[in-house]
Length: 219
Image (cartoon, rainbow, N blue to C red; front, side, top):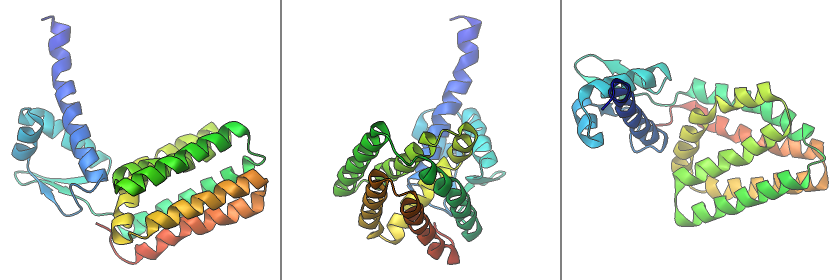
């Protein structure tokens, strides 16, 4: 084995731990308030403790965990303020984007239709994590189609928070899954009709309801 191969091994192990823990936090396998130990994570992923520490430090920087020396890492709950901040940012970006894409082209409309069908399939299967991904992708397509790369980059930075909140809120309000599908259908119909003002209003209503959950913490 070359020195270069040896040098790449620890980052690869740390990357595995990082993705394992991050995915578990986002899909609520590790809920807010859960204390994770380095030893248990090392056993779960099949690595030593050194890459576990690397991964946990990275996740702490991202705001998902809080490290406590000799105790472990605490999964941070989603705070009411974080929910409010994400909703405000989404409204600023998405209402602008949905109005700008009108008249929507066939490529965008076709892609949104595909993602709507994906959401229906994941809902029927009860896969909340996959539903949250398809749900977010529906919005991402509209933002990217608006053609502003800076806004699209800003929106991409919300990804982890959106996915985590999406799964958490669907656990808190299971009927929200069907409502999301209905509201996405209405947004798509407004885009087909070329009604920018109506589409923007639908997006505002669709996103703003999350503020109802900002009265307390969503785990």
